[in-house]
Length: 296
Image (cartoon, rainbow, N blue to C red; front, side, top):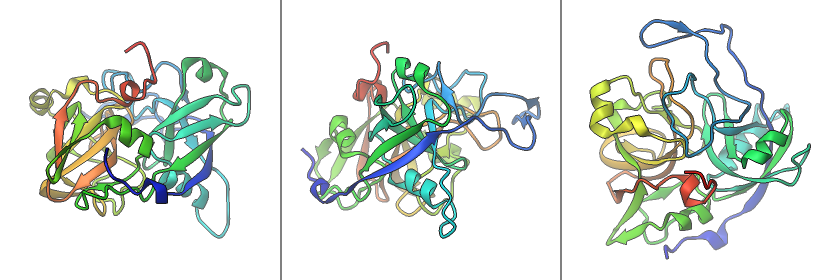
């Protein structure tokens, strides 16, 4: 058992409503090859895409699996304050409960956060997805902010519910921690989101435009909900390139056609000096680890 400060953490309520899909000023996105394309994107209830499904191969751009949440409460003292709280305080693995509408009482699990649009993503069973409506409110019992590994001060943890941490069954290796992942990814292909000054919300994207790199690292079978290791990436105080650093995150949205973008990753662990050992395990996906689905 990893020693943590779980007994000192605060569990607090945050709420979001099921967000509508949106388009920008133009319905077109321009692909990295220069082609204008019209595709589904962020927001909504995605009925045929959940964690455990492939992140690539869809006629889609930045599509979010399951349900996208946003808090539209307006407090003049804090610009977007309630939605920022939803995004920062929610952690991967948190329980989410529908509190209004035909699906009232149904429970799901937070699976990631998407920056730019600032959505929190929640997986629900298929029968719940069919009952949900845009605008339905979902309560998240936010728990995990401030979580520390007491015996590993050089590994920072963020966006991670202690329940999910325990379910990962990470192994101790002296002064290092072995964490299961499905893939390792070079920092060289990380794109949108690089340079952000904090990693307690949002994500950043794996660019998949170079075929040789995709094949070398086996990235064509990336799945939503996969845990992945990003090599030479330090997320301690934002996202930077640092040789020897290792960061672990979870894949949160689909591949993209737009330059600089790709499947997004929300950070879960980081070590600036390589105290994390990625251990390849094809089952290192939140859908398998928390048994969210029986069909994969």
